[in-house]
Image 1 (cartoon, rainbow, N blue to C red):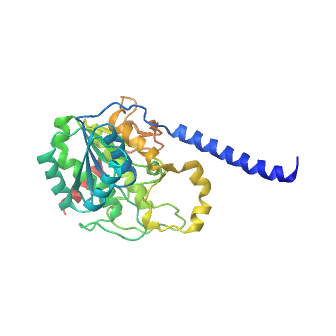
Image 2: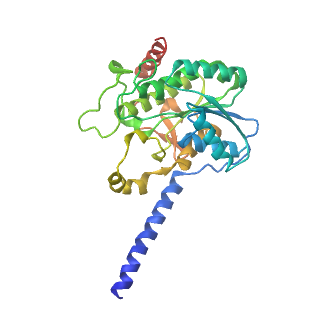
Image 3: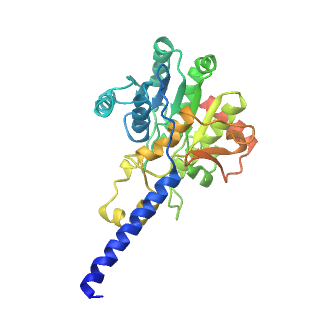
Length: 320
């Protein structure tokens, strides 16, 4: 075999192998196969104008659902609706302003829902963020605790009567990073700098554990609640991190093996919003969450005292 032919075969062989590895990963991550119409169903999605929320809104609208897009920016919500309409004419898309970093905005949004759409079928708590520098809500809580956890906590509490009356689903977007977190009650709601050698965002991880504990307490109270991890997805979620070109080079193996498209990550949200069934054995209280479109056991050893204390502390925080 000539050297020139070998130089051609090797890159092609590597490329084909990487392609099939990637496709195998995508198959393992899973897709929602149910495309049954959702006409007449009403879904509320926080953070619906971008990333996972956008892809979820698109998929549900394509199945003829009514989607209430709870977004901080009405301009960006309008842009998202225009993009969705380029892909599907189905469903109804309704933007309503919601800033989860403001209790006033959350209360205004809740009143709008109660007056205009009191009978909804699912509340998807999707919006979230990760920040590098100290950032706070209008009530002066650090942003991960204030938005990722407390904002949704207040939203569910304000809509609880409607949720119960409609037997509506509650979907909680957590993360597998909850397994690397702990609840620091001494610094709850405060900005704490990342420890030396800590490679992940501790405050973000902790907020995702709070999400799971929140889902557990809701399930105990009889709510139809589903908690999930969408996986590591290619969205603008880490926009505040401002990655450099060499980061993309260094993390290219991770991109190949672990980074999902926003559309694929959203499959877990869609599954929880439409098809997932909790059982006596597999539910948030027993430590199960949805990832790869199936129920998966968390490695976290959940503590009932912590779960109940976080619920109490969260209510206290609402009375600032």
